[in-house]
Each structure stands twice: as C-alpha cells, then as structure tokens.
Image (cartoon, rainbow, N blue to C red):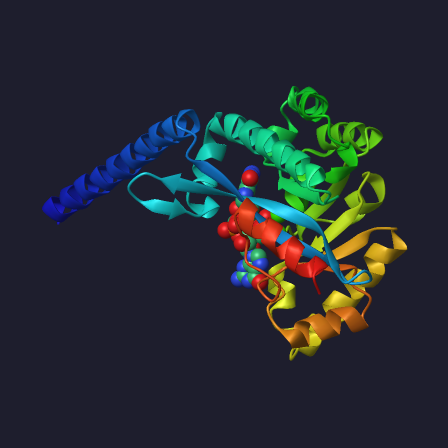
Length: 278
Ligand code: C2E
Ligand code: CA
Ligand code: CA
Ligand code: CA
C-alpha cells in the first residue's frame, strides 16, 4: 500500500544519490589522475597482410590507479565524455602519441599510430590546432598519425567532422572509421567524407570461421570499402581460421589477440625487434 510506495520512492532516490555521488567522485579522481600523470597509453600492433609486418599500432588508454590498479577505458572514458574532462584526457593522448611516434622514428621505425577521438573532441574547435602544434613541436611526420572516429560521430556531427577530417588530411594525417557496422547509420556518409580506412567491428569477425552470414557480411564490407578506395582493417582477430578467411578475401590489415594484446611501449618495441630478427 501507501507505505510500500513511500519506501520504494525513498529507496529509488537513495540509489540515485549514490550513483550521482559515485560519478562526481570518479570525475574528481579523473581530474587528479591527469595532474598526477596516472594514465598510460598502450599500443596494439596492426599487421599489414600484404607486407606481413606491423606497420601501425592503435593507442589505447589505461588508467593506472594508485589503489585500484590498471583500469580499462570502458570504465572511465564514458564518464570523462559526460564532462569536459574528455578534452584534457584527449589532449594527453595526443601529446603522448606524438611522443611515441617520435621515439619510434628515432629508433628507426616508421610506425603509424592511430588514436581514438570522442565526439566532443571532433566538435572541439581547437582540436586541429592542438594536433598541428603537437606535430610541429615533436617534429614528426603527420603521415604517421591516424584518427579513429566511429560512424555515429561521423553521421551525428557530419559537417563539423567533414571540415576537421579535410583539414587533417591536408597535412597528411589519415582517418579511419572505427567499429564499422555497429552504428545503425546510413552508408551515404562513406562517399561524402574524406576517409582512408574502415575498421570492421570485432562482432562481425568473431564467428567468420563458422557463420555463413558473417562471412557474407565481411566479404561485402571489404568489397564496398575497396570500391570506395578505402583500406580495410579487421578488429578482434583471435584465431588462425579468422586470419585465413581475411587473407583469402583481400582484407588489408588485421588487429587482435592472435598477434598481440595492447602492450606498453617497451614491449611494443620488443615486438618490432622480434619481427626484424625473423
Ligand atoms: P576500440 O577503439 O574499438 O578498441 C578496440 C578494443 O578491442 C580495445 O579494448 C582492445 O584491447 C580490444 N581488442 C583488441 N583485439 C582484441 C581481440 O582480439 N579480442 C578482444 N576480445 N578484444 C580485442 P580497450 O583497450 O579496452 O578499449 C575499449 C574502448 O575504449 C575502445 O574501443 C575505445 O572506444 C575506447 N578508448 C580506448 N582508448 C581511448 C582513447 O585514448 N580515447 C578515447 N576517446 N577512447 C578510447
Ligand atoms: Ca578504435
Ligand atoms: Ca574499434
Ligand atoms: Ca569501440
């Protein structure tokens, strides 16, 4: 009756307070994490199938929390995206990426690094100049930088994305569509936007060794991309069977646990050295 109702309302508002309190706490800790330099940028190799070598890596952020240990991005990027914090986190990622490209070049490795951009970064009017300044400060070749943007962002923020991507491509950076096929969006943006790579989402790769529908989708996506002059990267490649299917169907590059998990900079260098020695 009435009493139960009241209790359920109280319970509801109490849990609402808890979650919003937790969010505020997490936001506060994220601000400190930037100041205390608690983020780390891991690199996951991307293998070019024609060259059979690592030509690129995706930069993936982790939070090395003083008490909770290593925290995966899905546990804090969405929170950072709800506030302006994502801009500061994103700028840290850009700095660190340019620094790593520079270090790799000094070691004689022309490895491209791709970084993930959130919607708020794409619509941030200072993003381009931030990127451009970073490239100039580190004196790196902009061809060694790639931006990954999800199709949702490309469609929702179409005109601002169009301007940004045109500018970054003018200075030589490349652009990849991330998580392709998961955005429930029309395909018309593909012919209108300046793009270079299409990353097929892991969910389509999972069962390609056994599922005929996934085989058909992946074949069609590769054909579509190639007809639009885009190169294809398959994400989440974990087995030899998946790799064989992708190789047979002219996929350009692959990324996944079969080759390596995302690793720290030092371990990434070791992977490059190992590849040179074989
Ligand atoms: P994403 O951009 O789709 O990144 C690929 C995710 O798949 C990564 O998870 C990677 O570790 C994982 N992965 C790679 N290969 C395999 C595989 O073979 N099997 C499986 N099961 N997983 C694989 P991670 O590092 O946890 O990143 C999750 C998401 O967080 C990313 O998805 C991206 O959306 C976001 N993220 C990561 N770093 C950044 C960043 O610096 N900025 C922004 N805005 N978002 C980021
Ligand atoms: Ca990505
Ligand atoms: Ca992805
Ligand atoms: Ca994703």
